[in-house]
Image (cartoon, rainbow, N blue to C red; front, side, top):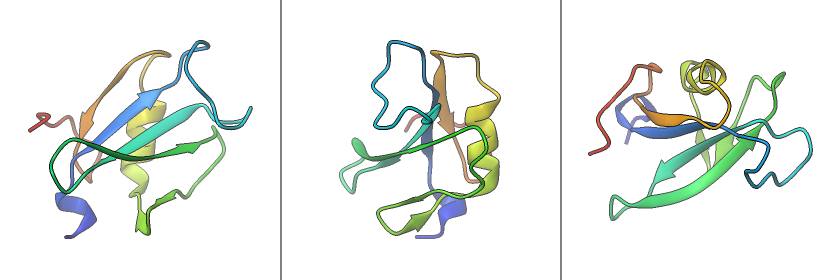
Length: 86
């Protein structure tokens, strides 16, 4: 499946959210094959690339996470545009 046709859940982590490393500020979650939550990747403010389970996350998706206020999240398409969850 092309990454531009995937829907991603993006999140700007709050201070209370789990962070696998101190520099992690944002998260991108891929859907599972069953349509529910899948693997999650974390990235920092200066990161330009993210690969989750062999899937390269498009730059606009990373930018969408960066554009959210802390503690907020939402679904986006591969172009970083808001998308319905299902």
